[in-house]
Image 1 (cartoon, chains in turn green, red):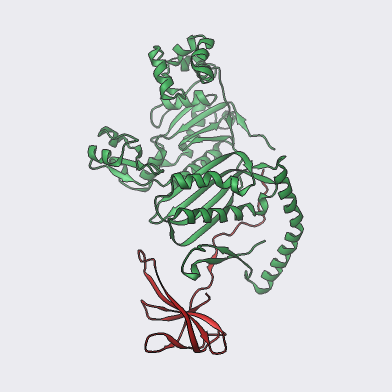
Image 2 (cartoon, rainbow over the protein chains, first blue to last red; image 1 turned 120 degrees about the horizontal axis):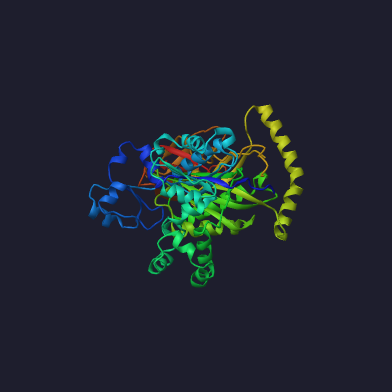
Amino acid sequence: MSRHPTSSLAVCVWIPLFPLRCEEARHEGLAVVPTALLAPDATRRLWQVSSLARHTGVKPGMTVSQAIGLCSRLRLLEPDPVHYDEQFTQLLSALGEVSPVVEAAELGLSYVGVDGLQGIYGEPEKVIEAIRQAVRPSDRQTVRLGWGVGKFTAWVAASRAKPSEAIVVPAGQERNFLASQPIAVLPLDADTHRRLRQLGIRTLGALATLPHAAITAQFGTPGSRLWQLAAGCVSEPVEGRIAPEPIVAALSFFTPVGEQELLVHALDQLIARALKAPRRIGWRVHALRLRAVLEGGGSWLTAHLLKEPTADAARIAAPLKMRLEQAPPAGGVERLVLEFTAFAPGTSELQLFARDAQAAARAGQQRALQSAAREIRMRVKRSVLYHIIEVQPWSRLPERRYALIDYEP
Amino acid sequence: MVPPARTPLRTDRLRAVNEPRQVTVEVDGSGAPTAVGRLGDLAVGRVESVNESWRIDDEWWRQAITRLYYEVMLEGGKRVVLFQDLITGSWFIQQP
């Protein structure tokens, strides 16, 4: 298996409230009114809140009625996670033009490995400018950039930078830079944050001056990690991603579907189809996502990284079904799309090997079938071979139950 | 690395199966079919008996679909399913 490309020198590219920025980019005039995005789950609480809305007292996590009570002009938006994901993918792709080592951390937050880029672009400021140019114009006023050795230093620098600006932490200056930063930049839970403040620890420098063993004794292994970060002892490199070759299976419904059991049925169909894809043979599915286009233009998305990569349909389906059960799409589903986005090679799972061995044995038949299908297509100049697939087998309208799809072995 | 696919999966090209086809139908006083007009190579002829009838009302929240189905036996023993679209009044033949 090929190793991930890495870079010790990192630039953190942070666009705060990325989903909200995506909405502002596509809806003119949204930036000048108080705006809030609803959570993508079923809670119907606020997820992200614009600064104008914050000034009126509206905060993430509030219910809609609480928010409207505080700000009657509040513009509420349904989330469109598929759009945000696409926009973020575009950003990663544009950053990939600057550096081959790009790591996505979360929506709107990514790291660019810049080892060796000074030989191409020159000074760090010029490398940063090249990265800034990769960001879409509407985000250049809000993007914050941080340069440093290791992802943590780069992240802290970006989090302290003003919008559209960058902070460069020269190599060797990490400890000095980190020492004056507030402990809030650490990946802390609320309880640990409160306890540290009760102990009078306000900055990373104050934390790093305490004995490592004492912090570990108080806060356990997570505390040890916090101390190492604060002391600048941790320098995690940027890990580039290997571009996946996703397998996609999609189903468009004749009419929007809202019933959970019907969506689960459709999901099983999609998983079965995606697992049959020839390029899946010999590989186990590691990462997958399920997205839905909703009636009226909204969307729904869930992505999962399987703890144990697998080629077993039931194990692939389990997290998706749980999500469908706990936080189903907010409206009727017009189109359901399943994507296998990352794979792991086949392992010692005997069952899997057996399955793949059978698949390999079928490969000969498959080649013969391909050849025959090609010949038919050449003769009649069009595709005349189809699979019959179930679309809405529960429908009372006979023409909605099954559909034909081009058969391309 | 995952090997590139030989051909992309074409999952979008769905074609409906068993779409209803319009036919001419003669009816009796109660509106039940008595004869079915010719449609390509589909079996047609006089209706010997109506085995069953049922009504479907669906998608009233979008564009209402209201059909009155008849499963009939034609002369010669062939069984076909017909329905009348109660909104337009047109008749269709469809595989059950």
